[in-house]
Amino acid sequence: MKPSFVRRMAFPAVCLLAAAMAAGLLAFWSAARQLALLDGFCTALVARAPETADAVYALVKEGTFAGQGAPGVLTELGYRPRDFAAGAGWLFAVAGACLCVGTALLGGTFFFSRRAAHRQQRQLIDLLEAARTGQPLPLLTGDRMAEGSFARLADEIQKTVTELALTREAAVTARDQFAQNLANIAHQLKTPLTALSLAAQNAGDAGGALAAPLERLTGLEESLLLLARLDAGALPLQPEVTDLYTLLMMAADNLQPLTDSAGVTLDIPELEPLPVTCDPDWTMEALLNLMKNNVEHAPAGSAVRCSCRRNALYTQVVLQDAGSGFAQSDLPHLFERFYRGEHPSPHSTGLGLAIAKELLERQNILVHAENAPEGGGRFVVRFYR
Image (cartoon, rainbow, N blue to C red):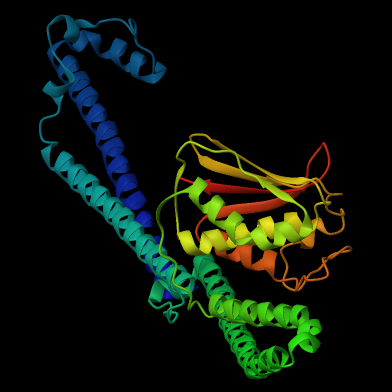
């Protein structure tokens, strides 16, 4: 058994011993006092009235007294127990001292136990806070931290937190490397794409067939650069109060060439001002990517419909097309990078929805995809207040 554990257990033991000593002394004093009083009374009675000696001896031998439990002669004469406590002051002083010492020891034990528990809890909280914020992990110190069940708990928590911190560092390193690789790929694509674009322009009509592939490659290069900035945390988002209807109209205007070529219309009813807090440029970019997906999967001659509603918690936008909807196997993966689904658009890179989700969720804006009961796929976007 460890010495500190013995010291800790000694406090309540001393308290109990002090209380037991006080109780024993009081019980002994009470018995001795009763004997002395009864003996003195009997002696005085026999001396005063010798004819009562036989009766007194008989009563003492029998151990019973008439009138037990009822008020006796002394009570009727006005005597109280304190009148027979003469000479017992020292005993009460000792009992009081024992009681005070026991109480002080008990209070001290409680105080130091609480303080030690608070210190241990504080060290664990500091450890978890450091792990959460990515700071260097402090060591758990102190004599009390190295003993008992709490020590085992603290040791397991420290091991787990250390492993999580190492895992987090490895994940951050891998993410940074991935972001750097994306940026390098995008930059490597930029120069040959520019050269091909110039060559296609100089070729005149003969280079027309290259326009669509070049446009797709250019879009891929821009998407890779944007993802690299998102992964590296190098994309500053500047939230401000913005009208949601304005963002929707700006996204629709940018999609005008695509909607014209696809024969699809964007139905955005005129709305009353709907203020939301977000970065207007990047939020518009995210909404544009969602609308673009709707347009690409809508049949010619149909419309992509937009509806909005507001409640006490959020402002919601629903973008719904009249296509065949999402395949059930695609729904869990729609927002994954480079995922193109069962029936992808010929111009899809598999990055538009992933970028939209990251841009929105970094601003506490939630988005999910679902199939409408009446048919068609739809995106639900919620701007929380």
